[in-house]
Length: 464
Ligand code: LLP
Image 1 (tube, helix red, strand yellow):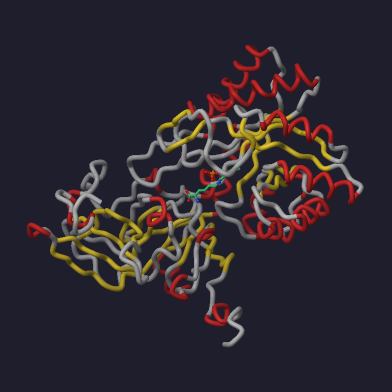
Image 2: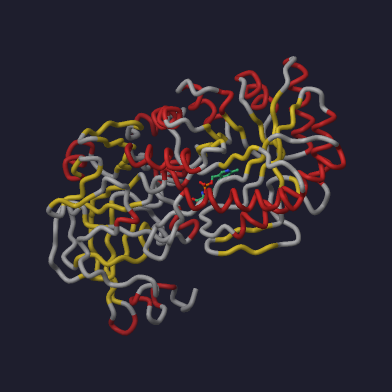
Protein backbone atom coordinates (compact mmCIF):
# COMPACT_ATOMS: atom_id res chain seq x y z
CA UNK A 1 0.00 0.00 0.00
CA UNK A 2 1.70 3.20 -1.11
CA UNK A 3 -1.16 5.66 -0.57
CA UNK A 4 -3.63 5.99 2.31
CA UNK A 5 -6.57 5.74 -0.10
CA UNK A 6 -5.21 2.53 -1.64
CA UNK A 7 -2.87 1.43 -4.36
CA UNK A 8 -5.04 2.74 -7.19
CA UNK A 9 -4.33 6.26 -5.94
CA UNK A 10 -0.59 5.89 -5.72
CA UNK A 11 1.33 8.53 -7.64
CA UNK A 12 2.24 7.29 -11.07
CA UNK A 13 -0.10 4.29 -10.87
CA UNK A 14 -1.49 5.04 -14.29
CA UNK A 15 1.87 4.62 -15.94
CA UNK A 16 1.59 0.98 -15.03
CA UNK A 17 4.57 -1.11 -13.98
CA UNK A 18 7.92 -0.19 -15.48
CA UNK A 19 8.12 -3.37 -17.59
CA UNK A 20 4.84 -2.66 -19.37
CA UNK A 21 5.49 -0.71 -22.56
CA UNK A 22 2.71 0.67 -24.74
CA UNK A 23 2.52 -1.77 -27.66
CA UNK A 24 3.14 -0.54 -31.18
CA UNK A 25 -0.10 -2.32 -32.08
CA UNK A 26 -2.36 -3.66 -29.30
CA UNK A 27 -3.97 -6.03 -31.81
CA UNK A 28 -0.75 -8.05 -32.11
CA UNK A 29 -0.09 -11.18 -30.04
CA UNK A 30 3.20 -11.49 -28.18
CA UNK A 31 4.07 -15.04 -29.33
CA UNK A 32 6.03 -15.96 -26.19
CA UNK A 33 2.88 -15.63 -24.09
CA UNK A 34 0.60 -17.73 -26.27
CA UNK A 35 0.23 -21.38 -27.16
CA UNK A 36 1.97 -22.38 -30.37
CA UNK A 37 -1.09 -22.42 -32.63
CA UNK A 38 -2.54 -19.08 -31.45
CA UNK A 39 -2.83 -16.47 -34.16
CA UNK A 40 -5.00 -13.51 -35.09
CA UNK A 41 -7.03 -13.54 -38.28
CA UNK A 42 -8.57 -10.13 -38.98
CA UNK A 43 -8.58 -9.48 -35.25
CA UNK A 44 -10.21 -12.80 -34.43
CA UNK A 45 -8.10 -14.92 -32.11
CA UNK A 46 -7.74 -18.44 -33.52
CA UNK A 47 -6.34 -21.26 -31.36
CA UNK A 48 -5.97 -24.83 -32.61
CA UNK A 49 -7.66 -23.69 -35.80
CA UNK A 50 -10.78 -22.62 -33.87
CA UNK A 51 -11.95 -19.02 -33.85
CA UNK A 52 -12.66 -17.72 -30.38
CA UNK A 53 -15.79 -15.91 -31.54
CA UNK A 54 -17.16 -19.21 -32.93
CA UNK A 55 -16.15 -21.02 -29.77
CA UNK A 56 -17.92 -18.50 -27.55
CA UNK A 57 -20.97 -18.49 -29.84
CA UNK A 58 -21.27 -22.21 -29.27
CA UNK A 59 -20.02 -22.71 -25.71
CA UNK A 60 -20.51 -19.25 -24.12
CA UNK A 61 -17.92 -17.54 -21.92
CA UNK A 62 -15.94 -17.58 -19.80
CA UNK A 63 -14.13 -20.64 -21.10
CA UNK A 64 -10.68 -22.11 -20.71
CA UNK A 65 -9.31 -23.04 -24.13
CA UNK A 66 -6.70 -25.80 -24.14
CA UNK A 67 -4.43 -26.10 -27.17
CA UNK A 68 -3.88 -29.86 -27.43
CA UNK A 69 -1.01 -29.69 -29.91
CA UNK A 70 0.78 -27.19 -27.70
CA UNK A 71 0.33 -29.30 -24.56
CA UNK A 72 1.62 -32.38 -26.36
CA UNK A 73 4.54 -30.47 -27.86
CA UNK A 74 5.62 -29.13 -24.46
CA UNK A 75 5.25 -32.55 -22.83
CA UNK A 76 7.24 -34.05 -25.72
CA UNK A 77 9.91 -31.37 -25.44
CA UNK A 78 10.47 -32.25 -21.76
CA UNK A 79 10.46 -35.98 -22.57
CA UNK A 80 13.04 -35.53 -25.34
CA UNK A 81 15.26 -33.02 -23.57
CA UNK A 82 15.27 -35.04 -20.35
CA UNK A 83 15.51 -38.38 -22.14
CA UNK A 84 17.73 -39.93 -19.45
CA UNK A 85 15.26 -38.85 -16.76
CA UNK A 86 11.74 -39.82 -15.79
CA UNK A 87 9.50 -36.80 -16.36
CA UNK A 88 6.48 -36.69 -14.07
CA UNK A 89 3.78 -34.26 -15.19
CA UNK A 90 2.60 -32.46 -12.02
CA UNK A 91 -1.16 -32.90 -12.18
CA UNK A 92 -1.83 -30.25 -9.57
CA UNK A 93 -1.26 -27.64 -12.29
CA UNK A 94 -4.25 -29.00 -14.22
CA UNK A 95 -5.72 -32.47 -14.49
CA UNK A 96 -8.68 -34.15 -16.14
CA UNK A 97 -8.99 -37.61 -17.67
CA UNK A 98 -8.32 -36.33 -21.19
CA UNK A 99 -5.09 -34.69 -20.11
CA UNK A 100 -4.06 -37.87 -18.31
CA UNK A 101 -4.42 -39.67 -21.66
CA UNK A 102 -2.23 -37.10 -23.39
CA UNK A 103 0.38 -37.46 -20.64
CA UNK A 104 0.31 -41.22 -21.19
CA UNK A 105 0.50 -40.89 -25.00
CA UNK A 106 3.50 -38.59 -24.69
CA UNK A 107 5.32 -41.13 -22.52
CA UNK A 108 5.44 -39.12 -19.31
CA UNK A 109 4.89 -40.31 -15.75
CA UNK A 110 2.40 -38.57 -13.47
CA UNK A 111 2.74 -36.78 -10.14
CA UNK A 112 -0.43 -36.67 -8.02
CA UNK A 113 -0.80 -35.14 -4.58
CA UNK A 114 -4.28 -36.09 -3.44
CA UNK A 115 -6.80 -38.92 -3.54
CA UNK A 116 -8.80 -36.90 -6.07
CA UNK A 117 -5.89 -36.57 -8.48
CA UNK A 118 -5.15 -40.29 -8.06
CA UNK A 119 -8.79 -41.04 -8.83
CA UNK A 120 -8.66 -39.07 -12.08
CA UNK A 121 -5.42 -40.78 -13.09
CA UNK A 122 -6.79 -44.26 -12.40
CA UNK A 123 -10.10 -43.46 -14.08
CA UNK A 124 -8.11 -42.68 -17.23
CA UNK A 125 -6.27 -46.01 -16.89
CA UNK A 126 -2.89 -44.49 -16.21
CA UNK A 127 -0.31 -47.13 -15.29
CA UNK A 128 -0.11 -46.82 -11.47
CA UNK A 129 3.51 -47.94 -11.52
CA UNK A 130 4.29 -44.65 -13.31
CA UNK A 131 2.56 -42.50 -10.68
CA UNK A 132 4.32 -40.62 -7.89
CA UNK A 133 2.16 -39.70 -4.90
CA UNK A 134 2.89 -36.55 -2.87
CA UNK A 135 1.39 -34.83 0.14
CA UNK A 136 2.43 -33.72 3.60
CA UNK A 137 -0.57 -35.21 5.40
CA UNK A 138 -1.64 -38.41 3.74
CA UNK A 139 -4.11 -40.36 5.86
CA UNK A 140 -4.01 -44.11 6.44
CA UNK A 141 -6.98 -44.70 4.07
CA UNK A 142 -5.24 -42.59 1.41
CA UNK A 143 -2.04 -44.58 1.81
CA UNK A 144 -3.98 -47.84 1.72
CA UNK A 145 -5.63 -46.80 -1.50
CA UNK A 146 -2.34 -45.78 -3.09
CA UNK A 147 -0.65 -49.04 -2.07
CA UNK A 148 -3.61 -51.09 -3.23
CA UNK A 149 -3.63 -49.28 -6.57
CA UNK A 150 0.04 -50.13 -7.05
CA UNK A 151 1.41 -46.57 -7.13
CA UNK A 152 5.08 -46.75 -8.09
CA UNK A 153 6.44 -44.26 -5.61
CA UNK A 154 5.06 -42.58 -2.54
CA UNK A 155 6.99 -39.53 -1.45
CA UNK A 156 7.27 -39.57 2.33
CA UNK A 157 7.01 -36.30 4.18
CA UNK A 158 7.03 -36.97 7.94
CA UNK A 159 8.11 -39.51 10.54
CA UNK A 160 4.45 -40.23 11.28
CA UNK A 161 3.92 -41.06 7.64
CA UNK A 162 6.89 -43.44 7.55
CA UNK A 163 5.31 -45.36 10.42
CA UNK A 164 1.87 -45.30 8.82
CA UNK A 165 3.06 -46.47 5.44
CA UNK A 166 5.28 -49.19 6.92
CA UNK A 167 2.19 -50.50 8.71
CA UNK A 168 0.00 -50.23 5.60
CA UNK A 169 2.57 -52.04 3.45
CA UNK A 170 2.97 -54.77 6.10
CA UNK A 171 -0.81 -55.25 6.27
CA UNK A 172 -1.00 -55.45 2.50
CA UNK A 173 1.93 -57.87 2.41
CA UNK A 174 3.72 -55.80 -0.26
CA UNK A 175 6.85 -53.78 -0.66
CA UNK A 176 6.17 -50.14 -1.50
CA UNK A 177 8.61 -47.94 -3.42
CA UNK A 178 9.19 -44.66 -1.58
CA UNK A 179 11.18 -41.47 -1.82
CA UNK A 180 12.03 -39.13 1.02
CA UNK A 181 11.16 -35.48 0.53
CA UNK A 182 14.00 -33.38 1.86
CA UNK A 183 14.35 -29.65 2.30
CA UNK A 184 17.67 -28.44 1.11
CA UNK A 185 17.56 -25.05 2.84
CA UNK A 186 17.00 -23.24 -0.44
CA UNK A 187 14.07 -20.89 -0.73
CA UNK A 188 13.37 -20.25 -4.35
CA UNK A 189 11.78 -17.07 -5.63
CA UNK A 190 10.99 -15.86 -9.08
CA UNK A 191 14.26 -14.67 -10.63
CA UNK A 192 16.28 -15.38 -7.50
CA UNK A 193 16.85 -17.68 -4.60
CA UNK A 194 17.72 -17.06 -1.02
CA UNK A 195 19.69 -19.69 0.78
CA UNK A 196 18.32 -20.06 4.30
CA UNK A 197 19.92 -21.88 7.19
CA UNK A 198 16.66 -23.59 7.99
CA UNK A 199 13.45 -23.85 5.98
CA UNK A 200 10.43 -22.62 7.85
CA UNK A 201 7.70 -24.45 5.95
CA UNK A 202 5.65 -27.59 6.22
CA UNK A 203 7.19 -29.86 3.59
CA UNK A 204 9.89 -32.47 3.89
CA UNK A 205 12.71 -33.43 6.21
CA UNK A 206 15.43 -30.89 6.85
CA UNK A 207 18.89 -31.95 5.75
CA UNK A 208 20.64 -29.53 8.09
CA UNK A 209 18.80 -30.65 11.23
CA UNK A 210 19.64 -34.29 10.60
CA UNK A 211 15.96 -35.26 10.19
CA UNK A 212 16.50 -36.31 6.59
CA UNK A 213 19.24 -38.80 7.51
CA UNK A 214 17.09 -40.10 10.35
CA UNK A 215 14.20 -40.56 7.90
CA UNK A 216 16.50 -42.59 5.65
CA UNK A 217 17.45 -44.81 8.62
CA UNK A 218 13.83 -45.38 9.58
CA UNK A 219 12.75 -46.20 6.04
CA UNK A 220 15.64 -48.66 5.68
CA UNK A 221 14.55 -50.32 8.92
CA UNK A 222 10.99 -50.83 7.63
CA UNK A 223 10.82 -54.15 5.76
CA UNK A 224 7.85 -53.17 3.57
CA UNK A 225 9.43 -49.95 2.27
CA UNK A 226 11.84 -49.86 -0.66
CA UNK A 227 13.89 -46.67 -0.57
CA UNK A 228 14.22 -45.40 -4.14
CA UNK A 229 15.87 -42.12 -3.31
CA UNK A 230 15.65 -38.52 -2.15
CA UNK A 231 13.24 -35.92 -3.46
CA UNK A 232 13.71 -32.17 -3.52
CA UNK A 233 11.32 -29.53 -4.84
CA UNK A 234 12.51 -26.00 -4.21
CA UNK A 235 9.57 -23.93 -5.42
CA UNK A 236 7.66 -22.78 -8.44
CA UNK A 237 7.95 -20.27 -11.30
CA UNK A 238 11.75 -20.36 -11.10
CA UNK A 239 13.81 -18.96 -13.96
CA UNK A 240 17.34 -19.53 -12.93
CA UNK A 241 19.16 -22.78 -12.29
CA UNK A 242 21.21 -21.52 -9.36
CA UNK A 243 18.50 -22.55 -6.88
CA UNK A 244 18.50 -26.05 -8.35
CA UNK A 245 22.27 -26.07 -8.19
CA UNK A 246 22.45 -25.34 -4.47
CA UNK A 247 19.65 -27.83 -3.77
CA UNK A 248 21.19 -30.56 -5.93
CA UNK A 249 24.55 -30.09 -4.23
CA UNK A 250 23.04 -30.51 -0.77
CA UNK A 251 20.76 -33.40 -1.69
CA UNK A 252 23.59 -35.22 -3.47
CA UNK A 253 25.81 -34.72 -0.44
CA UNK A 254 23.19 -36.53 1.64
CA UNK A 255 22.85 -39.19 -1.06
CA UNK A 256 26.62 -39.76 -0.91
CA UNK A 257 26.61 -39.80 2.88
CA UNK A 258 23.94 -42.51 2.92
CA UNK A 259 26.04 -44.55 0.56
CA UNK A 260 29.23 -44.07 2.62
CA UNK A 261 27.81 -44.41 6.13
CA UNK A 262 24.93 -46.81 5.62
CA UNK A 263 26.29 -48.68 2.60
CA UNK A 264 23.04 -48.13 0.74
CA UNK A 265 23.04 -46.89 -2.83
CA UNK A 266 19.76 -45.19 -3.58
CA UNK A 267 19.03 -45.72 -7.29
CA UNK A 268 17.01 -42.56 -7.95
CA UNK A 269 16.69 -38.86 -7.14
CA UNK A 270 13.93 -36.39 -7.95
CA UNK A 271 14.71 -32.72 -8.43
CA UNK A 272 11.08 -31.56 -8.45
CA UNK A 273 9.34 -29.08 -10.72
CA UNK A 274 9.02 -25.34 -10.73
CA UNK A 275 10.25 -24.28 -14.18
CA UNK A 276 8.99 -20.79 -14.94
CA UNK A 277 6.86 -19.63 -17.86
CA UNK A 278 6.21 -16.24 -19.45
CA UNK A 279 3.06 -14.54 -18.18
CA UNK A 280 4.14 -11.13 -19.45
CA UNK A 281 7.00 -9.66 -21.43
CA UNK A 282 9.05 -9.33 -18.23
CA UNK A 283 9.48 -13.14 -18.02
CA UNK A 284 12.22 -15.01 -19.85
CA UNK A 285 11.85 -18.79 -19.48
CA UNK A 286 14.45 -21.35 -20.58
CA UNK A 287 13.82 -24.08 -23.11
CA UNK A 288 13.65 -27.63 -21.68
CA UNK A 289 16.82 -28.54 -23.61
CA UNK A 290 18.75 -25.82 -21.81
CA UNK A 291 17.29 -26.76 -18.43
CA UNK A 292 18.20 -30.40 -19.05
CA UNK A 293 21.76 -29.56 -20.04
CA UNK A 294 22.25 -27.34 -16.99
CA UNK A 295 20.72 -29.75 -14.49
CA UNK A 296 22.56 -32.75 -15.88
CA UNK A 297 25.86 -30.91 -15.74
CA UNK A 298 25.23 -29.76 -12.16
CA UNK A 299 24.51 -33.32 -11.04
CA UNK A 300 27.40 -34.84 -13.01
CA UNK A 301 29.80 -32.29 -11.56
CA UNK A 302 28.68 -32.91 -7.98
CA UNK A 303 28.75 -36.67 -8.41
CA UNK A 304 32.32 -36.51 -9.69
CA UNK A 305 33.29 -34.39 -6.70
CA UNK A 306 31.54 -36.77 -4.28
CA UNK A 307 32.80 -39.85 -6.14
CA UNK A 308 29.37 -41.42 -6.44
CA UNK A 309 27.54 -42.71 -9.50
CA UNK A 310 24.77 -40.36 -10.62
CA UNK A 311 21.37 -41.73 -9.58
CA UNK A 312 18.59 -41.95 -12.16
CA UNK A 313 17.01 -38.52 -12.09
CA UNK A 314 13.42 -37.42 -12.36
CA UNK A 315 11.69 -34.06 -12.53
CA UNK A 316 8.10 -32.89 -12.05
CA UNK A 317 7.14 -30.02 -14.34
CA UNK A 318 3.52 -28.90 -14.21
CA UNK A 319 3.23 -25.23 -15.09
CA UNK A 320 5.83 -25.37 -17.88
CA UNK A 321 3.76 -27.98 -19.72
CA UNK A 322 0.17 -26.85 -19.26
CA UNK A 323 0.54 -23.17 -18.37
CA UNK A 324 1.12 -21.70 -21.83
CA UNK A 325 -1.16 -24.30 -23.46
CA UNK A 326 -4.33 -22.64 -22.17
CA UNK A 327 -5.97 -19.25 -22.40
CA UNK A 328 -9.19 -17.96 -20.88
CA UNK A 329 -11.77 -16.20 -23.02
CA UNK A 330 -14.11 -13.72 -21.36
CA UNK A 331 -16.83 -11.36 -22.54
CA UNK A 332 -16.63 -7.72 -21.52
CA UNK A 333 -19.72 -6.59 -19.57
CA UNK A 334 -18.96 -3.02 -18.56
CA UNK A 335 -16.27 -0.44 -19.22
CA UNK A 336 -15.97 2.16 -16.50
CA UNK A 337 -13.59 5.10 -16.61
CA UNK A 338 -12.69 5.91 -13.01
CA UNK A 339 -11.24 9.33 -12.22
CA UNK A 340 -8.22 9.19 -9.95
CA UNK A 341 -6.38 11.86 -7.98
CA UNK A 342 -4.87 14.46 -10.26
CA UNK A 343 -7.46 13.95 -12.96
CA UNK A 344 -6.05 10.75 -14.41
CA UNK A 345 -8.53 8.12 -15.47
CA UNK A 346 -8.22 4.37 -15.13
CA UNK A 347 -10.32 2.24 -17.46
CA UNK A 348 -11.91 -0.65 -15.56
CA UNK A 349 -12.99 -3.40 -17.91
CA UNK A 350 -15.29 -5.90 -16.20
CA UNK A 351 -15.49 -9.42 -17.58
CA UNK A 352 -17.84 -12.32 -16.90
CA UNK A 353 -15.40 -14.29 -14.73
CA UNK A 354 -12.73 -13.24 -12.26
CA UNK A 355 -11.10 -14.51 -9.10
CA UNK A 356 -13.24 -17.67 -9.16
CA UNK A 357 -11.57 -18.83 -12.40
CA UNK A 358 -8.17 -17.23 -11.80
CA UNK A 359 -7.23 -16.58 -8.18
CA UNK A 360 -3.55 -16.10 -8.98
CA UNK A 361 -3.66 -12.34 -9.46
CA UNK A 362 -5.35 -11.80 -6.11
CA UNK A 363 -3.43 -14.53 -4.27
CA UNK A 364 0.12 -14.14 -5.59
CA UNK A 365 0.05 -10.66 -7.13
CA UNK A 366 0.57 -12.49 -10.42
CA UNK A 367 0.80 -10.47 -13.61
CA UNK A 368 -1.12 -11.45 -16.73
CA UNK A 369 -1.71 -9.92 -20.12
CA UNK A 370 -4.71 -9.95 -22.43
CA UNK A 371 -5.87 -9.08 -25.90
CA UNK A 372 -9.06 -8.19 -27.70
CA UNK A 373 -10.12 -11.52 -29.17
CA UNK A 374 -12.86 -10.99 -31.74
CA UNK A 375 -12.10 -7.80 -33.65
CA UNK A 376 -9.36 -5.45 -34.73
CA UNK A 377 -9.29 -1.90 -33.47
CA UNK A 378 -7.31 1.11 -34.55
CA UNK A 379 -8.27 3.12 -31.49
CA UNK A 380 -5.25 4.39 -29.53
CA UNK A 381 -4.42 2.10 -26.58
CA UNK A 382 -5.46 2.94 -23.03
CA UNK A 383 -4.04 1.46 -19.86
CA UNK A 384 -6.82 -0.79 -18.63
CA UNK A 385 -7.43 -2.94 -15.58
CA UNK A 386 -9.41 -6.09 -16.30
CA UNK A 387 -11.56 -7.06 -13.34
CA UNK A 388 -14.04 -9.81 -12.61
CA UNK A 389 -17.64 -9.79 -11.42
CA UNK A 390 -17.12 -10.86 -7.83
CA UNK A 391 -17.97 -8.88 -4.71
CA UNK A 392 -14.42 -7.88 -3.95
CA UNK A 393 -12.28 -4.93 -4.97
CA UNK A 394 -9.29 -7.29 -5.23
CA UNK A 395 -11.07 -9.30 -7.92
CA UNK A 396 -8.54 -8.41 -10.60
CA UNK A 397 -7.75 -10.58 -13.60
CA UNK A 398 -5.14 -8.44 -15.39
CA UNK A 399 -3.77 -5.60 -13.31
CA UNK A 400 -2.33 -3.55 -16.17
CA UNK A 401 -2.65 -3.96 -19.90
CA UNK A 402 -2.88 -1.66 -22.87
CA UNK A 403 -6.13 -2.28 -24.72
CA UNK A 404 -7.63 -0.40 -27.65
CA UNK A 405 -9.41 2.65 -26.22
CA UNK A 406 -12.74 1.68 -27.79
CA UNK A 407 -13.03 -1.60 -25.82
CA UNK A 408 -16.74 -2.01 -25.14
CA UNK A 409 -19.40 -4.34 -23.72
CA UNK A 410 -19.71 -7.47 -25.85
CA UNK A 411 -16.04 -7.55 -26.82
CA UNK A 412 -14.18 -10.78 -26.19
CA UNK A 413 -10.96 -10.66 -24.19
CA UNK A 414 -8.47 -13.52 -24.00
CA UNK A 415 -5.88 -14.00 -21.26
CA UNK A 416 -2.94 -16.28 -22.15
CA UNK A 417 -0.97 -18.51 -19.79
CA UNK A 418 -3.92 -19.67 -17.69
CA UNK A 419 -3.33 -23.42 -17.99
CA UNK A 420 -1.58 -23.89 -14.67
CA UNK A 421 -3.25 -23.36 -11.32
CA UNK A 422 -6.29 -21.52 -12.69
CA UNK A 423 -8.94 -24.19 -13.36
CA UNK A 424 -7.27 -26.37 -10.73
CA UNK A 425 -7.64 -23.60 -8.13
CA UNK A 426 -11.01 -22.34 -9.37
CA UNK A 427 -13.80 -21.94 -6.86
CA UNK A 428 -17.54 -21.40 -6.67
CA UNK A 429 -17.09 -18.07 -4.90
CA UNK A 430 -20.31 -16.06 -5.04
CA UNK A 431 -21.94 -19.29 -6.22
CA UNK A 432 -20.46 -18.86 -9.63
CA UNK A 433 -20.31 -21.76 -12.05
CA UNK A 434 -16.82 -22.93 -12.94
CA UNK A 435 -16.11 -22.56 -16.66
CA UNK A 436 -15.53 -25.46 -19.04
CA UNK A 437 -12.19 -26.55 -20.42
CA UNK A 438 -12.45 -26.84 -24.18
CA UNK A 439 -9.68 -28.64 -26.04
CA UNK A 440 -9.00 -27.30 -29.52
CA UNK A 441 -7.07 -29.06 -32.24
CA UNK A 442 -7.01 -28.96 -36.05
CA UNK A 443 -10.09 -26.77 -36.27
CA UNK A 444 -12.21 -28.83 -33.85
CA UNK A 445 -13.32 -27.85 -30.35
CA UNK A 446 -14.08 -30.54 -27.77
CA UNK A 447 -15.33 -30.01 -24.23
CA UNK A 448 -13.08 -31.99 -21.89
CA UNK A 449 -14.45 -30.50 -18.65
CA UNK A 450 -17.98 -29.19 -18.99
CA UNK A 451 -19.31 -25.96 -17.56
CA UNK A 452 -20.89 -26.36 -14.15
CA UNK A 453 -24.64 -26.05 -14.00
CA UNK A 454 -27.01 -24.65 -11.41
CA UNK A 455 -27.81 -28.27 -10.52
CA UNK A 456 -24.12 -28.87 -9.80
CA UNK A 457 -24.19 -25.83 -7.58
CA UNK A 458 -27.16 -27.06 -5.56
CA UNK A 459 -26.11 -30.71 -5.54
CA UNK A 460 -24.39 -30.56 -2.15
CA UNK A 461 -26.89 -28.18 -0.53
CA UNK A 462 -29.06 -30.73 1.23
CA UNK A 463 -31.86 -28.25 1.86
CA UNK A 464 -32.16 -27.15 -1.76
N1 LLP B 1 6.50 -31.18 -7.57
C1 LLP B 1 6.12 -30.80 -6.33
C2 LLP B 1 6.51 -31.62 -5.19
C3 LLP B 1 5.34 -29.66 -6.16
O1 LLP B 1 4.98 -29.29 -4.94
C4 LLP B 1 4.99 -28.89 -7.28
C5 LLP B 1 4.17 -27.69 -7.15
C6 LLP B 1 5.39 -29.32 -8.56
C7 LLP B 1 6.17 -30.47 -8.66
C8 LLP B 1 5.03 -28.60 -9.83
O2 LLP B 1 5.51 -27.30 -9.87
P1 LLP B 1 5.39 -26.48 -11.25
O3 LLP B 1 6.33 -27.12 -12.22
O4 LLP B 1 3.99 -26.55 -11.69
O5 LLP B 1 5.79 -25.09 -10.86
N2 LLP B 1 -0.48 -22.54 -6.96
C9 LLP B 1 0.82 -21.98 -7.18
C10 LLP B 1 1.85 -23.01 -7.44
C11 LLP B 1 1.93 -24.05 -6.35
C12 LLP B 1 2.91 -25.13 -6.69
C13 LLP B 1 2.78 -26.27 -5.75
N3 LLP B 1 3.70 -27.32 -6.01
C14 LLP B 1 0.73 -20.99 -8.36
O6 LLP B 1 -0.35 -20.80 -8.89
O7 LLP B 1 1.73 -20.39 -8.73
